[in-house]
Image (cartoon, rainbow, N blue to C red; front, top):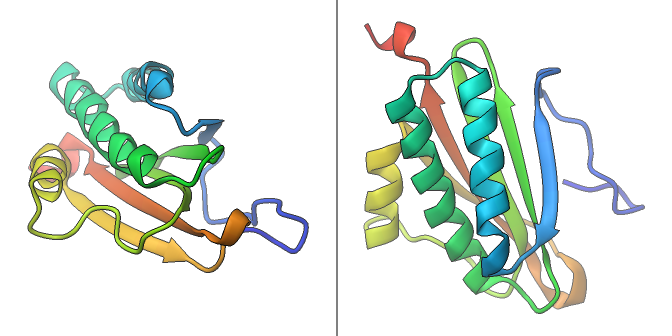
Length: 144
């Protein structure tokens, strides 16, 4: 969400959160994947979970980039908590749902993470709206 000056509103993020904004272009996927892998490894997630998160973020961000308005920015927030790592990716887009439940992309994301949610948030720049995907992976110790 943004205030009247276009600045992000603070949310319930932990102090370990990392946010990056890049141009919504496919060539920036490597940067986003690398950031997610680095944070996940730093948070001591096992290698399989790190690999799954990289793939899930790649799938989610690809869908967002394809739906983005021209010259949009892709915003990614990695929010590692004590019980789960939550990744939120968003951009200004032209359509409503970027990934539909039941679609192949939804199946991929659901297979790689514990929870998938999509959202739209009001009006974005250039007559677009902000569309996003939230991915949640719970820490292994909580799944036992």
